[in-house]
Image 1 (cartoon, helix red, strand yellow):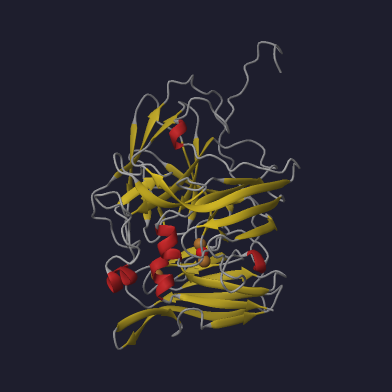
Image 2: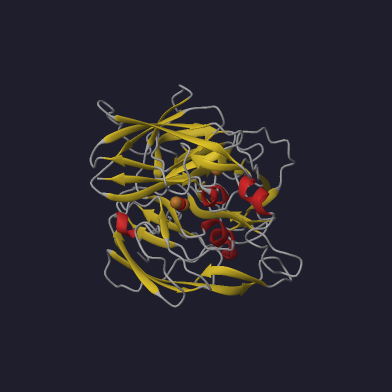
Length: 454
Ligand code: C2O
Ligand code: CU
């Protein structure tokens, strides 16, 4: 309120002025005036974008932007996405992590591929707050690799105080040739399928080496999405403690101070840190393409943090000890399943599969409103991020050790030789769901399976 006395207004942590606007991702326009409906128009099309300075690249985009526009809603909203496909080939849109009805999940098992010139209307409510994302689920390694991804943030109106200046970071990479053309989707053939293809140009919010202007004395809350086709990322700020405050599906139960955070393809993390007073900080984000291996690679600076010339914030909120109420799952009477990510020999060499089957031929069935415990193993000698559609799970243990904090996840990295046990509470959303490796080259090579919830 104007003129209401000498008391200084607290800093507006959600919309601070003076940030590097180039790094701020635009939200998709809401075409529905109703307060609890978000209607977004999304068009997949090829657009000429200067990703690498001086070169023009024909990127596959949503609404001509890289990444696509951020879809932003509040927990409980109805979201309607009027989608049109103007790509040269068929596509679908999958809402990664959102607990939507099966028919809205965007796989070819629940909908017809959307042909060029056609459209589809997705409509669902968003029951959970968190940092999610959207991407195609048809030839996904090629389509995501060419630029089709965007963030989907669901805010929790009940979250009392903002935890810090919020910044959404969509991590990805893209292959750009010297003449600016996109690297062929099937570059390096079988080898590329097998080891995954990391585009040579690493991007933060579609930018190479961007700068974040942070306000002195005000914490940063980063919502990070790994939207890369196959690349893992490692976050560390030298000399700076980082606090992991959330993951795939919103805030964790309590804050966890960490030296670094590694993110597998498909995964999200929420990080909290206080910018160092009076200093510029360089953030090395290692692109460790094999998650579990020690990173002997030289750190690569992928993003810079500089203190802005903004007036410093005051009274920075402190992090509460309890961030979210996350109940433990009652696993009494739970059905059990074993899931093995594996190589299966054939004449031309190994093919990647799950439990000896490939490309969705493995089908689990489960009952609605039950709890299952799945034991996930990886008998190959490199990592695979397991992703389950439609449902959150909690990690019970990794090689017998309980995780340090309780959190809801939809993606968990599988390290060779270590068993990960997860508990999945199914609800009443019957239908066909998928689970697969989120190294999308692996998924397209066969590491995909089905779950029929009945
Ligand atoms: Cu991120 Cu099956 O998807
Ligand atoms: Cu894999």
